[in-house]
Image 1 (tube, rainbow, N blue to C red):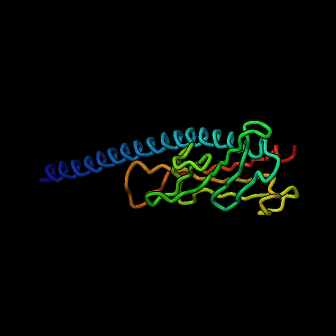
Image 2: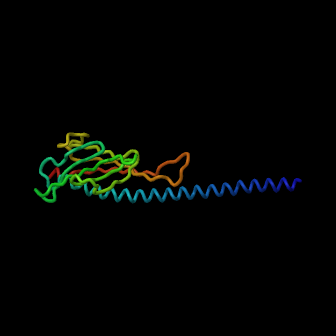
Image 3: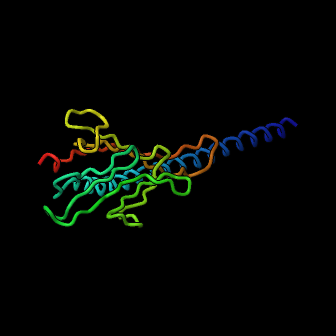
Length: 182
């Protein structure tokens, strides 16, 4: 009888040990997938930011007057020209709410389809803060000399859990509009 109880006890302890090992392997796999998603998210968002910075470097290029058209918390509209006095283009970077998610799109010349994007953002979205030459925030459109742009990208996690957290990556850009100083 004692041998049977010992065998049952050993089986229970062995089962608990095996269950713990399996749970640990599943958790390690989930963490590994989330780390890979974080790496991909950083790489993708850095690529997006480099393209957005190239568009921001065009602010007021070849335009003599009224290059900054509209400055809002979640959108930025400006103009540039192909050459001095050349064809004027209008760029609008805007956060849009599409299918219950925030997305960043870049439109050129009032097109209906975005030139860039839409890029899915977290619930933070995108935030523009504009500064004048004296570092005062949110000046009139004609006094803007540089911008701080903060955006946060996100991935959904590997599995649905009670403590589900999104994989997020927040990027902050400071862009000085050198064409406005020339």
